[in-house]
Length: 120
Image (tube, rainbow, N blue to C red):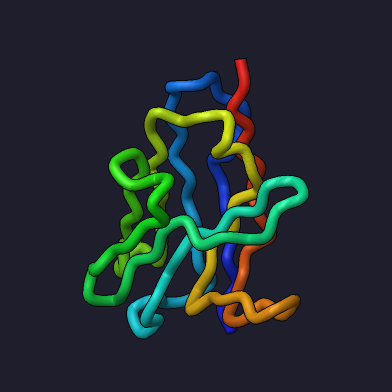
């Protein structure tokens, strides 16, 4: 297990930007997939973006072209740069290590979450 701590959430106007950071308690070099999930009120958690140890990234369609995920294995951090934010991006964002969701069960390691609110 690895402990994950997110930072960088907050309130931003539509079309604005935020940068989320995730700090891990140990080396993430051997962790295959680091990712970001989000959960909006009344909705299921969804995978927003993930990056493998080899640097391959994938995104949910709704954020492609607007969000960028990156990992720094030397600093044990993962970031999510979010641009052109929309109100529908409002959610609690969670950093994960080899994370997943199976029914009501959370797999892998999860941070405590950081709130992102997009509103004018």
